[in-house]
Length: 239
Ligand SMILES: Nc1ncnc2c1ncn2[C@@H]1O[C@H](COP(=O)(O)OP(=O)(O)O)[C@@H](O)[C@H]1O
Ligand SMILES: [Mg+2]
Image (cartoon, rainbow, N blue to C red):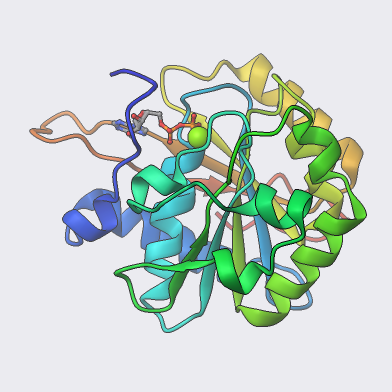
């Protein structure tokens, strides 16, 4: 399957699929994660490209919105953004327009067909993504977006390719690391975990994408979450 293909909103097209069920399980795991307060900003990343960061972000957003939460998807992959394609939105203005031109986020956040789910697309690609994502403007924006929504889900580029996700990590409540069955090597996963660990972000766990049951006519996603249990000394050993 080509990496450039737009991620699928399987939670909308096939709400009764095993894949959609797996995303609901992931939602439950995140909402019960052992933090003292609800996770209001969640970074979704992975070691390499094509592992399912964007797929996880948009589908998790759909199932979170289905519980009545006000959910914002923030496309912080300013290198290969996909959220405007997933939700079929105009991307001439977006995050970078807010950060560079000072546009009011309210003007560029788009509602979607899913109730409670809005998207801030990437906007035009900038020459200096990491710098923008690490700016004071970005911090201020994130604080405002968090105040205006129940949860902000942040799609990012791969950790091992560029610093963008690591630059964002200190600004968010928590992160999940997506791995793709049969693609992500364990050493890459370890390296990504180490890089994120250095930022001090609370790593909730890993999401295993693309486990394919034997008797499968359609593709399935399956997400299995486990806790590293090494952050903040908390006993995160459910899973
Ligand atoms: N479990 C899966 N089964 C089939 N296709 C998948 C699966 N996960 C992702 N894909 C497809 O693989 C491609 C890359 O996924 P994507 O979520 O865009 O990865 P990333 O954002 O990490 O680069 C997309 O075309 C997506 O639809
Ligand atoms: Mg992506």
